[in-house]
Length: 360
Ligand SMILES: *Cc1c(COP(=O)(O)O)cnc(C)c1O
Image (cartoon, rainbow, N blue to C red; front, side):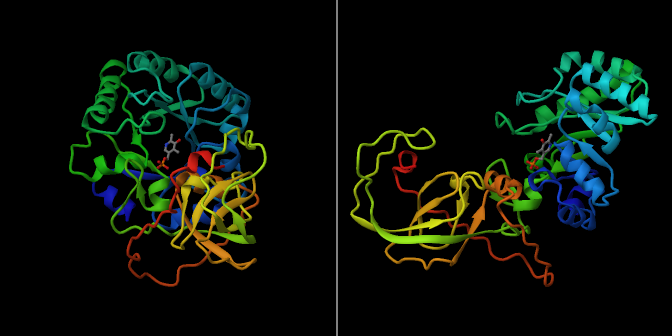
C-alpha cells in the first residue's frame, strides 16, 4: 500500500531491515510487496541477506565504520556517507577489489544526528566525485530520530534546493534524493510539493503500521502484524510491598512501592534483554510491576495465571527492535491466510501504576 501510494508521488521505497536483523524471510516479503531496494544500518545484516540469496540492491544506511570498508564494498551496493576519510577508504577498498561502490551524501537538516552541514556539502560532493571507484548517486537526510525534528516543507525544500545547487555548482545531477524515514510519510502523502525528493526509507511504518511522529495508526495498515508471546513461569499471591532494608535494584533505581495489600503476581520469562518493558501492551487485565534482565513481573488483578500459559502483547518499535534481535525470542512466521481487511484498530495499553518509575 505504501509503495503504491508513494509511487503516485514519484517516490520509491527502500525497505529498512535493521529491526529484524535482515531476516531473509521478511526481506523477501518486502520485495514481494513491490519494494525494489533494501537498506540496513549494520553490515552484518546486509551480509546475512546476501548469504541467504537476496539479490536486490542493498544499501548501508549508516555511515560505514572505517574498520569495515572492505566488507561494505563487498556486500553493499551503496552506502550513506558523511565523512571524506570514510569515502576515501571505501574508494581504496573498491579499487583493490576492482568494483564500484555507490555513495549517497547525508545532509544535516536539524535533527542533529548524521549529516554534512549544508554549507560544506558542495566541497564534500566535489571531493567525492574525484574518488576512483566511487559513484556519487545523490543526497539524503534523516529527521525525527535523535531530536524529533519533523519533516516539513521547509527542511524538505532545503534538501531539494541543495540538490539543485549541486547541479548548478558542479554540474552533478543527483539521481537519488532520499528524504527520510517513516516520519516523512505524512509530509509525502499530504499533498505538499515534494520537490525533488524521490525516495524514502521505511521500517517502522511497514512493520508496525504506525506513523512514528505521533505513533498513530496509518489507515489501511495492520498494527498487529507482529505480536509478542511470553510464557508464565510463576504466579503467586504475594504482598505488594517488599520487606527488608531497601537499597538500589539491579538497574540502579530506588524502588518505592505503595502497600496495596496482597496481590496476584505473575512472572513471565522475558526481560530487558528481550524487550523494552514500557513498550508492550496487552488486552488482558494485567499491570506491569517491574522488569529485570529476564523476568517480567505483572499484577494479574486477583486471578492467578496458570504456569505455562502464554500471554500476548502488542509491541512498540523499541520493544520490537529488542525482541527481533534477542536470540532468546523464538521467531515464528505465519503465512497470511487471505487478504481480508485489517482488523479494527484498538490498542490497549498496560495500565501503568502511578509509581511505575520507582517500582523496578
Ligand atoms: C532506521 C533508519 C530508517 C528507517 O526508519 P523508520 O522510522 O523505521 O522508517 C531510515 N533511515 C535511516 C538512516 C535509518 O537509520
